Image 1 (cartoon, rainbow, N blue to C red):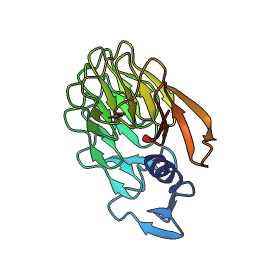
Image 2 (cartoon, one colour):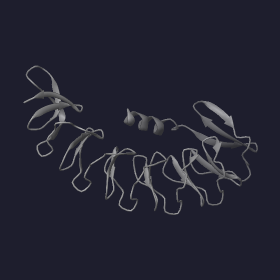
Image 3 (cartoon, rainbow, N blue to C red):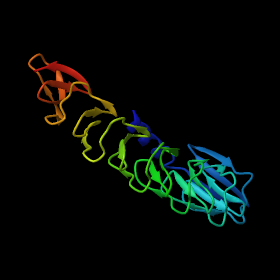
Image 4 (tube, rainbow, N blue to C red):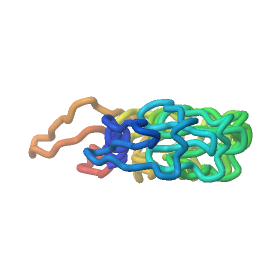
Length: 222
């Protein structure tokens, strides 16, 4: 579901764009032309299909970003932007973010010198210096592992590895979508790229020395 959401937000504005006509600024989105009556056409600069600025501030789609600084405003990787004072995710300010050190990582993860973020929200307790993205759902720092913005309790970042299809493990445990896979054996746990089938027709996508699993559920004991 998260993957579907990410695809959707990046595809919504494919055909969006700004237009300046007869000293007026418009934003064209989803077959609907919106007049930006607060925009200054004379100073209006189009940065791309989703971002622009004028002498009064920066814009995301048809909305002016509140309190944005026009001179320093710049677009980052969609849907991030910043000025000398603030960082924005979509049209909202990322509170307490540091625009000077802010960097977009990937899969909606980002960080600055003080904090790390997922989709514009602070990931609590992160060590920003050691924070790294492992894949689209898992990240870690020197102390912890995270599933999206949530800490995986008792996880070991030094031995943690992603296995694909929502699975991961460290030297102590196996996890599925950030949750412990109870009864699993980390040493022998493997994930298959394609489903396999038991004699009774039940599908499984992973196994260890004791059990067969499918989508994080125990299917059968060996």
